[in-house]
Image 1 (cartoon, one colour):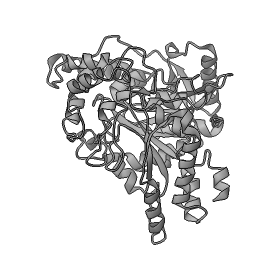
Image 2 (cartoon, helix red, strand yellow):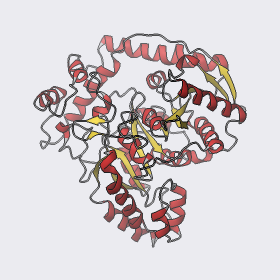
Image 3 (cartoon, helix red, strand yellow):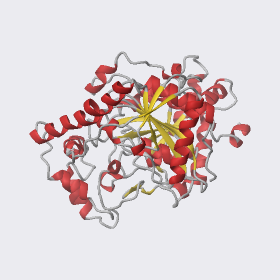
Length: 475
């Protein structure tokens, strides 16, 4: 175990599985190493909302079972972190960072948590996040803040660099090597943003590839969970575990024929001949970040990618879809919570927060606006706006761009192009691209059409393997 204590940083799932299989380390020892790192570094980062008190006993049970079976799941004995808007049926509450939900102990695991446990993962804890997945206020609340968890810090520059939102705690904890891998959730940019800001790989899957059952909702037409890891291979392993059909989430029924092992798309030459579109209207305003993006494009060309200048058709209008769906979804979720929780509707959350303005210090303008809407999914204005979302983002937006240029993917600096694929339900993969002179991380994002995860993983892996841009933070 001693060599792993000194070299736990940046270790991969595959390397750990080999060590566990060979008896060089146990799951208990591995879990202790990460718990020790949390004690050493999380006082500064505030990435972890709660540690699983059963983590060591779970790891111990897995160690016992390993002695008697050769059939183990891909995450067997591997400590992972999940975002604190994902239900677990244990001693960890699911809070979305809200003080109103501090006592929300779920009746059962979220569907993806069941899949993680079935694969042998040790749920090490739950990560802090931007409260209600960054959907509480428009009054300048920083990414990573919640009334319950406080402020998450970026390990590359605590208090200096934006940590990204809303899966900020997952991003900071995995970047700082507080667990092997993590799960975030996204509605629009909430995996891609912290992945870019913390020099991680983040996969925002196609809507329908991963179940949302047991995850506190924001907007069901855009909500999805996905991997946040330090390497593309680890992200592919994690995606292979959590993807799958859930009869309680009808969006997943169309994914029955999708691949179940995304590691088969890890190809060194995955960029060769790929047509990748770049819309330069999404260029970062910061010149140094723009230069990093241009360097990334040059590196893609060196690996055989064909870069094509494109202009993505854009239609600007104020959609009410997310606000409308939030009221519907949050009321449905809260209505099923136990009597131990003091709130059972959005209206009650708003009233509770008004009594705790010392903690809910940035206000709740978004929650209050959502409460003014009907929350009726048959509302004519809502249906009109949802149709426009698809029309402008997919039918007359991304689809046209891909077809016109015969593209395999679009490329964006950081997460700047996240809104259209979010509304369309299309996948994206962010991968580390470099750092500014001051050490601020930056990623690039590959975006594709529905269920194009295999192509995106090929390209992201090839880019990663030929550049190896990620450098761990100095803690």
